[in-house]
Length: 540
Image (tube, rainbow, N blue to C red; front, side, top):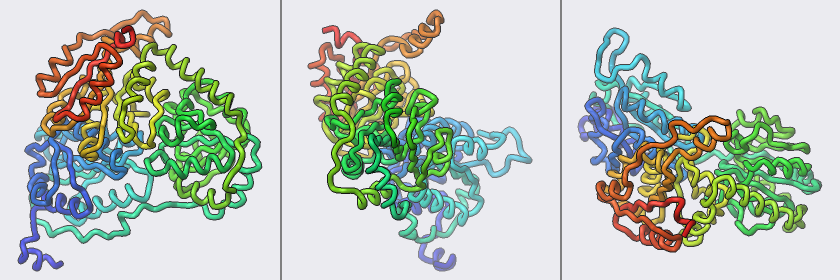
């Protein structure tokens, strides 16, 4: 369409409005954000384009909501923020999205001129560079054509590469200037590229010849829908397997060849050393996966990953495949027999898992029993968002999720305050499906103001709040380091009254049975429900 034709049919709009229309055409139905004097033009076209806008109470919340939305959908999330402090407030969630390979597109306004002017509202030395420290890239669009190109570049890379957050900023005056519509979307740009490894017949023979093959499955394959492929490959190789926390749910809880999510247990190193062939697929094997510096392998080590950086990291694999994990497994399956006898001792694995669970319980007493009670009544399709709290550290190991890609935790970057806003984003994406928030008493207060958003949206969101009255993990760390505990106790509010002040429901169960009933009731509520949990629950 020429500019003259666009002017005649009324499709010429301010660029801020055109960006919203473009996003709608590309499939965006929800934007999270906060309007301000510097980005009002970005809000001109949201309703006209037919996009839902979710008003966060803080830009950090908006970023986490976009992250939670992206994880729930398997796609990407979008947030709109203002210049300066608005963008800076969003950098923490963008850093978390980078760490966890989550696709978030943050679009902000920026000042028109900074080199020759000082003292402007929200002025920074280099806003674009600030975002570049936590994003895959951060660029300024100085023209409509550049803005449209950057949006399409972001969406194309979300689909074809390892998912990382992107930031685009547009000068305030340019957002308000008239612009032609964005070009029509090219369908191929929305199709994920699935790199395969070619003929794997030779590698399949290597796997079948192994005496004790062992898989490690990570978040790169840990999406719902991949379970069948992962399980089939494991069984038809006669292998055992660990999953990382992000890969939880890929393996059945009662699978005799599954070590579960206990990769971070020290003893896992012994079993890895026993294997003559270790195959890690879709995992960084980061510090937060292993909690040690070495994986522990002594046999042949194989890495499969879509990110070439992972294939050349400190773990130094013997064989590498630059490939999409599921595409790799599907190709491998075509060269495997229909049935291969298990090559590991099921009793040995079962005994190891029992020890791992007991160790977890001993380290942080009382939480395992609560996890077991909740897991026994949790709907199979529930999606959980957890925060940095001892309750989640235990639950990630012992809670056998029935589906992959249904437990989301701020790994790596490790940001407190993640769970509540992220679960709101997930609940918006999963309307009608159960979504759960798990938070600790201290971290919850980082983003507690997002209660207002959850109530405003009428989300039936259970918020399981673990309240031990202190920063217990830090206290334990100090004691272990022979440091007298200091600055680990803070005055907490009455959380139930605070929830009710926001207009939410609140429950304070006294027994595990009451806890289970409160959870099930919360899924049917007309608004969020705070469920206050304390260590006294297991003393009843």
